[in-house]
Image 1 (cartoon, rainbow, N blue to C red):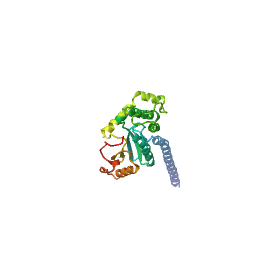
Image 2 (image 1 turned 180 degrees about the vertical axis):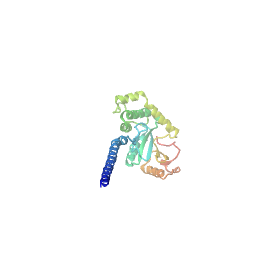
Image 3 (image 1 turned 90 degrees about the horizontal axis):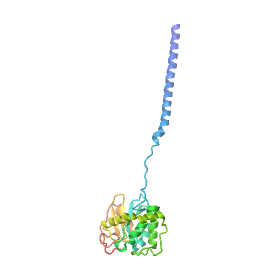
Length: 250
């Protein structure tokens, strides 16, 4: 009878050993999972890149940064036609979120040196006060200048004339920006203001529109560009005429 007793004892020992092995395995899995949970934040806290808008500065934009169409306005701050057209085109851009406005200085020789001096005032306002200050300065200049190269009336001074803005003006550094944009406009054959270049940011195609272009013509330009086609010059449609600048508004 003794051998069967030893057999039962051996089976009990094997059973307890199996239970111990399983328990140790479960404990090991639990400890490993705890360790992975503690280390996980170290791998998930890595900062990810986020899309940011470019820092404000020349060229200055008004409107959504992700707009499909950019209206580049070549303008002279002493140009009477620009003075009348600027608030119109700016309001039009506000009503069409698929567009944004970009300013491009084009001081005309007949309005110098006042046109470049006022352009520097706007640039310094933007440099020292930011994007809103730039567009406020452009609006204020158009509201107060006498135009045609006569400049501001005697005794009229820009209300945001801070020490920083005055130092910017005295340094003359913004004149480089103004003159660079003027040379670029001349290089592209633009000799009259206002002129608009409407660019499709998706395709890179653009249309050059002369004069104070009305809203319907702007919508037509957007439609042409969206259809991936550039219209041929139409001499009976001055808003989209091609090359002649001899009789353009100045």
